Image (cartoon, rainbow, N blue to C red; front, side):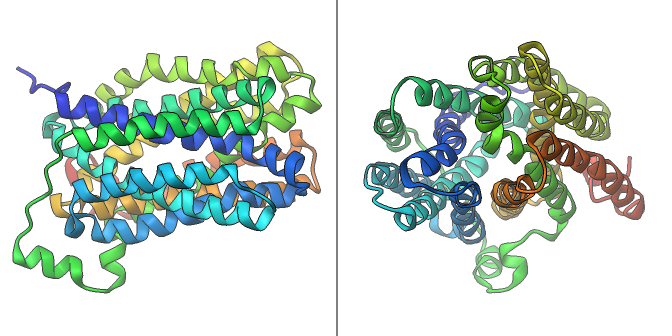
Length: 399
């Protein structure tokens, strides 16, 4: 008989995580347009406005990955969501680009602080025998937020103004903050040896070496996907597909919702390779398809393929980390993984924005589509290189 997965704690933290990521993705997809239209930013400056958020997130993940268990998961969650709310309100006051950059940096830090806590807290509610399935269901909250957030953002951007968007975001974060103070969260008990280890100031105290390989691949996948998050709105304008583009993320969400439970069970039953290789292939094909989108059908097809690719990778990469980390290092391990993912999402807008100065949007998406192909090669090489002691292996042993 299977151990129960959908318990009260699992459901509560999953819903909290959904809202935290929803606002992140909602803002990410519109901020470049707002920076250009309201503050006169160039495309490169607008890309930096998107990317600096991730710098704040990276700083939070580095620091909180180390301090999470020392400060306590409950305290990090509650302080993080409170300041996430306050820095979201700060978007109401943006006189120039410098202030926008500062607000984005701080907002990103407290988003990173909150999500680092939720990512660790949820693992306490997942039965060990259902790690892959549990993380895939939990990851569905992130993937759906990655779809619904941009969808809401683009709808609001086309029908209202920036002030309304900030008001909506602030209200839902405030309600989520109240929930965080009501949900009981247990801090992880630590032995004296574990406390001493976590207090040490060394690279290993911030970074989990066991997950570096999958984290680097996550960086590359985030880099590729950032082309969609940051530039889809602008690309849709040039191809006269603005209305249809609003449904891009709806298709993305539907595909993820339909396939996520299946990929989790495949991960647990057959091993990671059966889900990781298809994720790289689907993302590459999806980005190539997006580069050729001249009508709504092709655009929405690319959304489905990208959902199968990036959506599948994101949660299963997290599941891989769980199989590699000891319990008291889960916070550091997941932090390391999301540092890689967020770094790709952060560098991507600026780097690809500069590439767009040379290439068309079509060329930009072709370049982005090549990146997952490189991930296939890298993933294969790393698996072979660690054949004696696999870096990616279910249950941490050779398959």
